[in-house]
Length: 119
Image 1 (cartoon, rainbow, N blue to C red):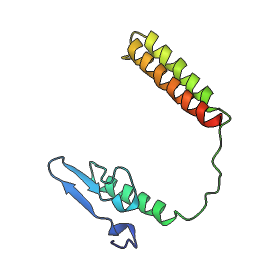
Image 2: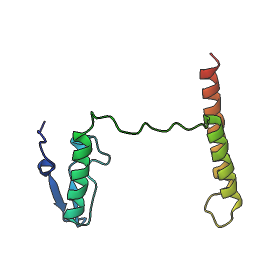
Image 3: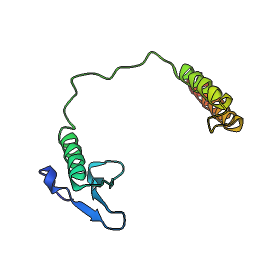
Image 4: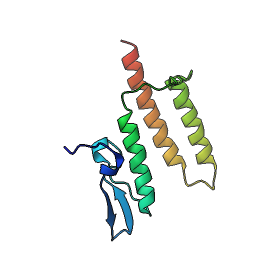
């Protein structure tokens, strides 16, 4: 594997068919591994940011992540309420069939969670 000592070691190539620049960020676990940019400067900025994040990966952040007080069931209920509002809105490209699919998926998730937590 190639050694990366500085962000300039990241290969930035030009794709003539798409007329865009892309850094090869696969070694850093970045998704997508080859994002496309209109200019080489944009690609270089992203490569620099990804390299710095990779270089500082072992350091702990100053702030701890905030844990929400919401439960999974409340989150799923909010999702269903939002989906119902979208289905009722005629301007939205989201119909009752999509709402029904979402309801079925939420019910399956609730069953799985219930079966895991009840044992």
